[in-house]
Structure formats: structure tokens, C-alpha cells
Image (tube, rainbow, N blue to C red; front, side, top):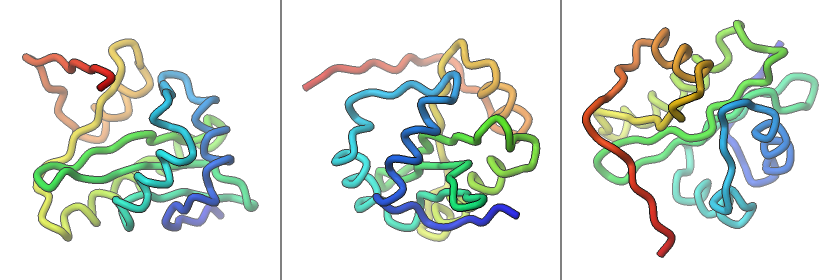
Length: 138
């Protein structure tokens, strides 16, 4: 039976391996080990993993900017999907965000990520329209 716990930097290598296997999950330099370690430190208590037989089969990175929550890298090994692991990970993070007063949470889903769109829509999340995300390397 899968178990859930808070993510630590010791989970990085297994998490990274999982992330590279998930269609629609894009990695960048922001996903380096030092950057993830910093993210986990700043967002203690919001990021979780799901394990089975000592292997990470699900992850979620979540945090906030003081006004809104954000979710990144919700990933479930395709062999373990349809078991509500993703839903449980999301609820764990949302529960922690609610506890500190975050009333809204966002997730960015790539336009061509059909699996992601199906998951978030089925989970009752509202697709936002009317704005674009711009990025720039400082």
C-alpha cells in the first residue's frame, strides 16, 4: 500500500527520475538540486511524495507567495494512476495552504498536456482565460 510523507532533498534523485518520465512535465534549470532544496526549505510542509516499496511513485511541489498558493510537479508514475494518488497529494498540499490562510491556488498546465488538462478539470479546477504568462531570465 502506498504511503505519503513530506518531501525532503533526499528524495531529489528519485523525484527527478519520475519527473523525466512524465509526459507534459517540463524541467528546466530551476529544477536543479540546489534550487529544489531552496524551494523545499522556503515551502516546508507543503511538498509531498508518495512511496511504494521504497520507490517514489508520486510527487507534488507546492508553496505560496503570501497571497496565493502554487502547485508544481504533480506527478504520478503511470503504472499507479487511477488510484487517487494525485488527488491525495493535491489535497495534502491544499490543506496545508488553507491552514495558513491561502484562499486560492494556481497550477500552470502546458497547452498541449492533455493528461494534465483532464486531471485538473475532473478534479474541479477552473481553467482560466484572458491572460498569458511571460517569462524572462534576469
